[in-house]
Length: 170
Image (cartoon, rainbow, N blue to C red):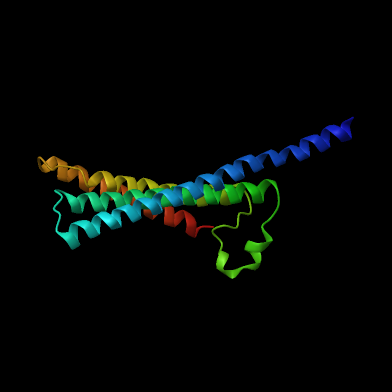
């Protein structure tokens, strides 16, 4: 009975494949949707600049769309890193990634701390991109608004600095 129970417990790790496949599907959807959105933006860009159709605030809208696409691509990368990390931690090592010099160290997860560090760095980038997307729509009414903007930029730079320093100590 003990042997059966231990085998059942050990093989229950294969349930993590649900998370892995869900992450891969979500990643594919985000990459595809973002690429389609960028294609639509390209068509709109050509319509404005090639055919002279004027759209008020078009430049800001383009920058906002591009930042949203970068945000979506980064989120897709989080899903990819998490999916591959869960697979490597619970199922088996990816021999294809280890033998391929193009794979780099980003997708090779040795332990839970590796997965946390890699996800944390990409999530920090998502937050920074979201900050700058929101900055596009800020209206500066007074000098205090400029000070808040400077403070926000300083905090983003500080987060990047500490993220870089944390990576150096490993």
